[in-house]
View 1 (tube, rainbow, N blue to C red):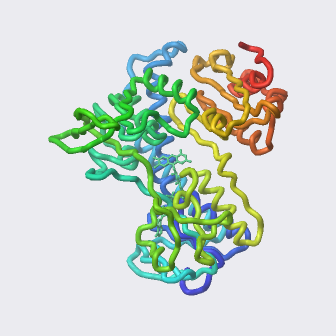
View 2 (tube, rainbow, N blue to C red):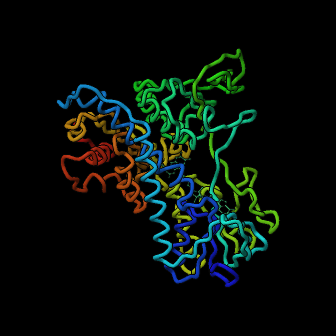
View 3 (cartoon, protein in one colour):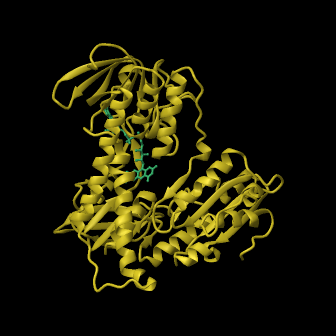
Length: 470
Ligand code: FAD
């Protein structure tokens, strides 16, 4: 059915960027085909990223709560154990249900779905080696590259997805490793480290830089690291991994200080390599049609998501910008709106970032370090969850809200939240920043009591005046 009839839009890649672009294009009345090689839709995010990781974070949190918190709430039972196959099955069920859901949305919106590996023959033709073993050529007036990203490996290291794993292997381990070493203290490493730590692994995180999650506000980062350390996560910062070798049943890492110095060794049952992700364009034939990329291999696009080749666009992890699912989705919608002759817009400065550990850390806008670097006069308003009645009521009061606002105008520049559910709480702040709100706007907005959201209101009060409850 894809065959030779020409599409208005062809999307290569069915991740959050690609599938959202395809649905939006079809909704705008454009004849659309989406090509995906994986066999299921949803991309990295749904199959081996956001969704399975959140499933395991939730399950492992429940186990941790059962072990460490329930008794304080007067809920007692004699023993609690982990059934790892059942935990994995619930994760797999969630993933399978959601990927099928997207296929349903494709049908509903009349997006044509071609399963196979796409490569450019020309700027308006994609040859697809189909999963069934054939080949078909898909033609389109506009082609959107949404091929996403892949795990970044490290030199001299082979990922076998059993003992030396990427996030994909870490989402599917068949037993709880006694010792887990995580290479890279970004959000993926910390989330997966949390999962296995809660299930019983001794977790050591090795990081080349002097800090964990470099994009985080420094003050919040310090509290966050302390919180993870309380959960028994160990950190070796400013440490370089020299080599990783499988020895017997385990793995031996050779380390040295990032600045150089004496080598040490570290043993592990499983090593997770989470040192970043790289754009994925392998086998796509970009050179054949002359699409420009930067040194990191990211496709260069203008503000309309157009590459240097007319009719060829790119969105999501394969272009510069935050490598996040919701950013890819926004790109997809805006790109298609431009193609349809409408206006589209994505503000990369207001893409929220969330680390889904416990507590979660969520932020939008600028960090205090960034505000300082801009040379803007600013005020800081903070409020601890220890003084928030709902957090106290549920005995889960670790964390803080921090708001940065311009001194002269009170306009909010950045909001940082560490708390349970911070990833949900942040959106009030995202909206406020989009509307150019002042901290007083939030402070004078009636917030329901008792909610965690009240901490944001109080931090806003603290920014230009005084909070009530501390
Ligand atoms: P992808 O999701 O990578 O999709 C690209 C798709 O294109 C893939 O399915 C691939 O098979 C297909 N493809 C590639 N080349 C071809 C070709 N030539 N022909 C046909 N098909 C092709 N982000 C968040 O926002 N929140 C999170 O909580 C979060 N958690 C994560 C946890 C983990 C463990 C990982 C690894 C990532 C996480 N991310 C998260 C990041 C998120 O997954 C990505 O930002 C997002 O998936 C990018 O979407 P995309 O559509 O650009 O690319």
